[in-house]
Length: 549
Image (cartoon, rainbow, N blue to C red; front, top):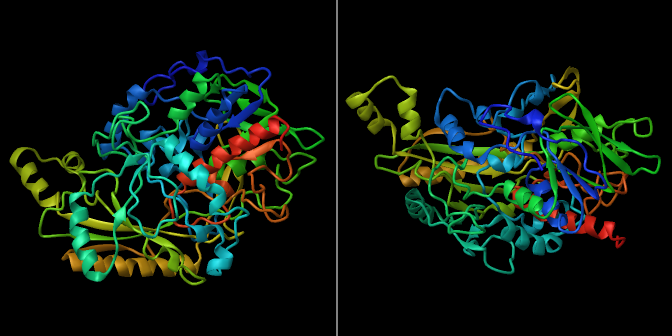
């Protein structure tokens, strides 16, 4: 078990921690984000489990310091979780018109992306699993909503989800959410009147944050800096399940980037080869391996693991490793009102609209609308950004803060084989390994749907009486940093990397727990589906180890 590694931004006692391999391990999990943490927790009580993570174990006591970084304009978002430098280097393919800012929103460390996420947790819709047949666009999944439905319910209990059954467009569910939904914000009430006038339905949003005390963690106390840091721990992050797995006997080795997976002649993974801060390399052997390193680092690891037997990378007989890289596209609009909106009092949004989601077809992608609670600058950010003090500062803040309003939307991107993660030819990381190169493409269906979302957003804002000052349309869109599709699921080994149980087609004892297995992206935030699939992977690995599958 690794110890804390010191204050924010420091290496602390990294070299003093025992990072040698665990003997007689049953399961090796690569990655301590939400998927890896849930798999490890699922198996640790009955099996010897070791978790390897590329980044450090962050000290929970440093979160207030990280929050201070987040609100100071002199720091960028990657600085909050020590992202950057040679360790996190990447390239964009030179020919692409779409540049992907990978480091803007990722974390390497125990807890992974849940350390900085906003915490919205929706289920995919039933049609998302059969998009080709139902919408005429994209492939189908080899599983359907019914296969994941019980795991969705369990994932909501494990993460702790606050929600309500007030969304008439949501897929069917079997029980209420574990906690009641957060109350609509003040600006939600302003939006509600305008939406009613134009015939748009609003409903609550399920949140992986505590609306009341849950699972030993406090209710949300309203820091408002949920993205990129929650100092209170009321927002779920994967350290919850990492610590629970450790309590059951699992071992966590941090600052241990896995550089390749070794295999034998029978196409079984034999060891994860990892580096340590002192420059040593070790081989963690195990009976079963679960790669849970996300949609970019998972294909990168498989490609780095190329061998004479697998010259194109492990699990890549289909050629699909790294291909079909997807994200959700952002559409938005905002402006100001001649009255207070109380924006920036809440660090997450509490109301949404799925009304147009299932209207998707071959020309229009599914999308969901979001009613923001955090438009415009916060008073702290405004104050820190200026040089004035006293009455001039107060007067400026009165003019800048409190009357902004905005809407957002997430739009599905279809899989495209040319949108992919490969290994860079001429750039390496701090250990001399090729960095990921991103070739991100965006199709016309998504861009046309962004225009449709913008039309609705502007209509609502104008009905609200807002002076619309900006629109993020097709020319100003960007990613939601939801990395999906690079090791996709398929019943056909020639068309995908993993089967319906997320076990690799080519390697008997290797599973992938990640949004990288998504054949399509839908337009719902992916973490709840990641969690549901991870719980299912945990069950499958347990069955395989017991000789049942």
